[in-house]
Image (cartoon, rainbow, N blue to C red):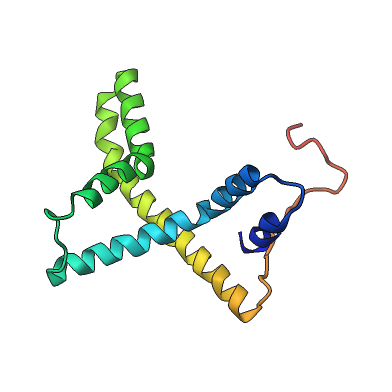
Length: 142
């Protein structure tokens, strides 16, 4: 995201509409860290007694709108199980919550690690997985 954001904005070959679309597409990587920070912030404010739930109806509507985007996999899998007639499979749906928080946590860690790489000008190291194939064997399924 950081590598391509400024060249995208400064590009003379793209229209304003294409630049805005590209910036929104690159900012998809911000969703997990923002959601994690918002979740932690909401929990802290709730337990400090500073969250005014009834007085801020705008935020309730915004949260309700946000749930359809963030929890869309839960809705899709649940509806798919209902339409397939596999109603007992819906009981496994809460287990997806663990996967959701796991992915949110590690994608946020990756984002903050890339911010740290950008600040310290550290080059990321990519440890490639070794493959145990013969060099001439192109067809893997023979």
